[in-house]
Amino acid sequence: MFIPFPWNLPVTLAANALEFFLLGTWFFYLALSLRGFFSKSPNPGNAFPLRRFAILLPAHNEENVIPMALDSLKKIDYPAGLRDLYVVADHCTDATAAIARGAGAKVIEYGGEQAAGKGHAICRATKEIIALGLYDAICFFDADSLAHPGFLMAMSTHLNRGETAIQGNEIPKNPRTNWLTKTLFVSQVIFNNFYQYPKHSFGFSATLHGKGMCFTTELMKDFPWDGNCLTEDIELQMRLVRAGVRVYFAPDAVVYDEVPSDIREHFHRSVRWAVGALETARKHVYGLWVRAIRYLDYRAFETALRLTQTYRFLLAACMTALLFVNKGHFNFLVWIFDHPHGARLTFKLLNWIPLALYPTAALLIDGTPLGYAVYYLVMILMSFVMVIPIYIGALRLKKRRRWHRTEHTSLVSIAEIVGDKT
Image 1 (tube, rainbow, N blue to C red):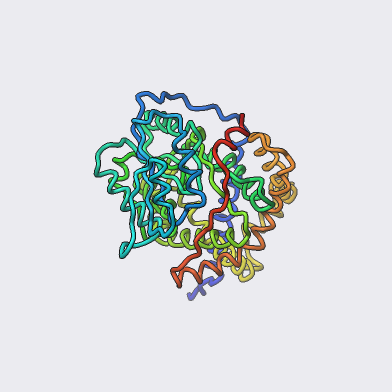
Image 2: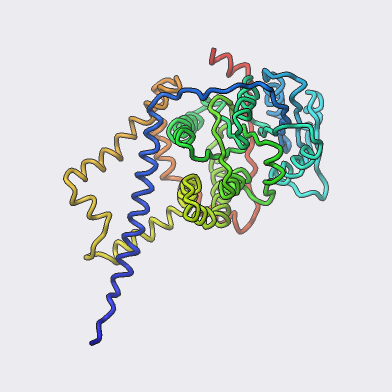
């Protein structure tokens, strides 16, 4: 007897699998973020014996802001004999190299036919520094970033606990400039308190941010930078997790970073990050899922889940299409909203309460005026408005392989920031 194949079955299975995945991802990160509401007791540790550090600062025509960065790095509260500052002057045509030498930094200059770009510069310089055989670890900063005086002491403590890849606590240095910097500041505070710290607390791998990073020289030998990637920090993070190496978060090692004060600069930076995320996902998302399943590696699972969100708009579009095609058949998303008692109200509360609760709690924890909470709403609105243009720009940039260089203009010094904290 001929039994017709139920052609709607594959569609129903695909639709429900995708619905379950997207809803499950949302719930997973919502549950993870709840850890941010609880106290953050510091991990015990000892900075002694003190480690010897190389501090690496890449720069391309940064004469405007590099004096403040160098000043903060020289004022770090750490024995001078146990730290050396290297500035990588990458194809500079201004006074960046001269300023660095005048500040007492060791300057490595690249130019001419050598490949330009931050990734290439730090890759070559890291190899040169490691070859000296003088240092336990290398710390990475940007020309627009500032180091808290206690940064190296905190990193020495983390290294003594056996940590080999560490991301410092990144905080915007220019939050009061205008509405955009206030918006990005609130976004970063929420990210630190409800994503980065909860991941650290539960043993997941932290995300790398390009500045305020610290790696042992032994680790850097095995995992050199990829100079061809637009977001070399994210790419390195994925390789580390795929190899079973955890990236630790150091909330006590603070680095201050400039956020864009011009919406065009923010857009161009976001486009570059989107291209880097797409390239990194293409290279590593499959390998991360394989490791997560094969070794039951929960860090690889979370990292793979996060990296898969790079394709969230494609996944959402596919889910919408499958919902329409599968209309009239079972859909997990429709069922869970309609059938459990109180489901609709629960989901509404889970969606709307965080709009007020998360920014308020994050700002209270950080000691920031609560008036800044309104900029969380601005952040959400800005994200909706800019998301499609960013990804269209990312697709165009991916073809051209030429990107807009972010201009750094904030002249905030470490003395101004530390003074505000006291």
